[in-house]
Structures are given as C-alpha cells and as structure tokens.
Amino acid sequence: MSEVSTAGVDAPISDVAIIGAGPAGLSAALNLVRARRRLVVIDSNRPRNAATFHSHGFITRDGVSPLELRRLGREELEAYPNYEFHQSMVVSIDRADDAFEVSTKGPGFTKAVYRARSVVITTGLTEIMPALPTLRAFYGTSIHSCIECDGWEERDKPIAVIGETDDLASRALLVSQWSDDVIVFTNGVGEITAADEAGLLKRGIRVDRRPLADVEGDQTGLTGVRLADGEVVPRTAAFVRPRYAPKLEYAASLGLEVDDLGLLVVDARGRTTVPGVYAAGDSTPPGPQQLIVAAGAGARVASALNEDLLGAL
Image 1 (cartoon, rainbow, N blue to C red):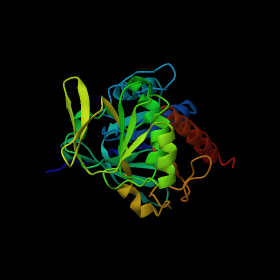
Image 2: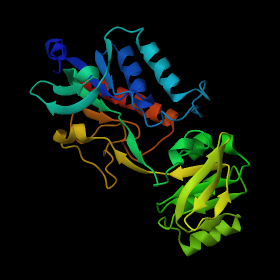
Image 3: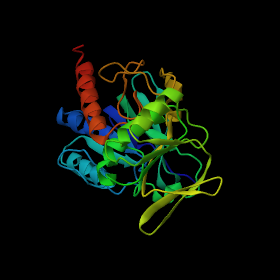
C-alpha cells in the first residue's frame, strides 16, 4: 500500500518549487535561497549525463563527475535556511487558487504534495539514440554527444560522427577542430546535401551513407563502426547526435507553450507563457547546453523570479 504524505500541504507555502537538481536547478536554488526565499527542490536523481564520468568546461570544476557536481551543489545549499530537497518524481503540477500544487511519487511509492507560489522547470531532456545495440556500452567513455564538452579528450584520434539528423554536416565540421581524421556515418537516414558533402571533403571529412549494424570495442574502448554489409571501419572515438524529447508530461495541465521541438517557450529571462512558471536549461531553446550555460540560465531565472515575487516588474 502506498504511503501518502500531506506534509507539503500542511506546511507553509514555499516561494518556489524547483523541478530538477541539475546545474540549472541548483544554480537557481542557490541564488533564490540567498535572496531569503523559501524553496523546495524536487529531483528524481536520473540525470541525462549520469553515464558520463567527467564533465568539462565548468570553471573551477573541469573534469568533475556530473554526479559529484550535483552533490557539491546540494551540499552548498544545505548551509542555508528555508531550503528543502526531496528525491521524488514529479507526477503533476496543478494551479490552485493561491499556489501551484506539485504532486510527487517517491521511493517506496510514497506520495506527497508541495505547494509553492511559483515553479521553475529544469528537468532537461531524454536522449533518443540511433538503434545500435552496443552504443550504450561505450557512451560516456569513448562515445559522447557533446562535442564542446569532450572534443579535447578525443583530440587527434580517428573519430566517427554518427547520427540520423539533418545537422550532421555542421557537427562534423566542429569535430574537425580536434581531429583531421573524421568520418560521418548517416546510417542511411541522416541528411547531408551534396553541397555540404563537397565542403566537408575539402576539409578531409568523409561521408558514409550506408546503414550501420553496430559499434565495436573492447576493454580499451571503441575500436570501430560496423556497417550492415559487414565492413568494420576503425574508429577509436565517436560523437553521436541523439534526438531529444522533453520530459514535460507532468506539466501538461498548465498549458505551457512549446516550440516545434517541444521545448518550452520562454522570454529572455526564463519566464514561460504561464505567469508564475519559469524554465531554464535543456528544456528551453536551443535545447541541450553545456553545464555552465545551464547554470547561468538558472541564475538568470532566479533574478527574474525574485523581482517578480517582489512585484517590482
């Protein structure tokens, strides 16, 4: 039998409920709690980058594990009053007369409802990878999705760019900044125009449009890309281009406006189209961002939200 907690309903209404404890959510939380706001942070502890051992480009924390970065952020917040953290999955957000009601399901099927004057959504995205059976075995070690994050670590290696999207040419061009041995694999799906292919060839980047069967490797990491015809192309690193799906089902009742990609429409300071609801990080355009960019967006949202609660704008 599930346990229902009513503590959130009986407790004073928080100023802010932050959904997601990645860099965007924790940055927003730190700035808001320092502004003496009462807030609750709710996170399911299932980050998109959990498979990655090291994150890069975050000043003073270059090379830190993404999970360690989250732990350090939560540890800093615990020094402040009026901060709560709950490891739970948000099931729904509904607008009541005087507050937003955030319903959650936690470990052991426990349920709780938290009430807040405003909501910040920072839950990110789900990655949809090309259907290669062994890809996940090397994801986060020798196969990556963020070129800016991991290009330096794979410099001067034979690199594959794998994807099924229409932006592979620009991704391959970016990868060529770190290696002069780059092959783009479209899996027979990804779109590269003849003009783009000619431009890539001028930089020594080859395009292989054949369907793929899988990737191959051993204890040292990736060793090659196996095509459907049986040929194995040696590669020791790869950048995969996922498709992304926003994780926003829990907010469906709010009527938030989204763009063609399903990302939340926000203004320059992170306000959504519903008063009292804000968003930052990967669930907002332009989509996936570096950790430090997401953290900056969280700080920007915190500033706008604090001012709005004061009624200054």
